[in-house]
Amino acid sequence: MEKGLTVRKIVIAGVLGAIAILLGVTRLGYIPVPTAAGNATIMHIPAVIGGIMEGWGVGMIIGLIFGVSSFLNATVPLFKDPLVAILPRLFIGVTAYLTYAGLKNVNQYLAIGAAGFIGAMTNTILVLGMAVIRGYMTLGVATTVAITNGLPEAIVSVIVTLAVVAAWKKLGSAGRQKSKISGDL
Image (cartoon, rainbow, N blue to C red; front, top):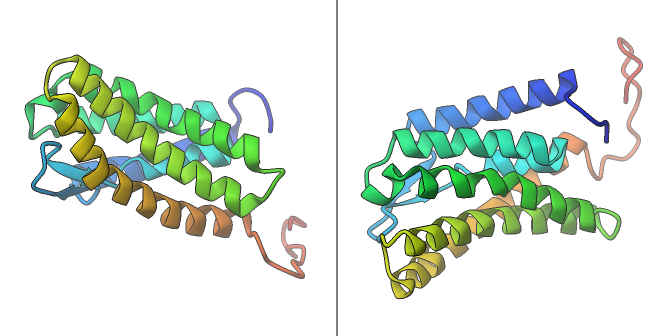
């Protein structure tokens, strides 16, 4: 992986950041549920994908976009607190990247799926942990939300992340040919 900010990293951060903004502005990234969290989310998935595809820095930028969107679109008091809405989201892409980097030599599919799960659970655990620390909910309520929202969000994250990243990386494609235009695979 290239060090520093490359054109590719900027473009991928821009595209995934735009998807995160679209999911936030249209509210398509938030699924209303009758729990203390108010919404289940798929907004973390672009940060997970960014972390896997381009490293922790890109994942962190997309997580920041997710956090700011959550803060600006807050419908419940706990997400009007930037320490709950923004700070924990910075680590989604970072943990996804570290998980992927640690497992990619074992099995690409395992690494991608595990990164999707860990990225989603990072969101759940850090947001709910901060909500408990800041006094917005009790540990018991946070645990219930983690089970009722966090685990389904993590499962969706695994499925979507595997599908998108495997397609993006063209995993499993046999007999790839060079492009006649660019000479690339």
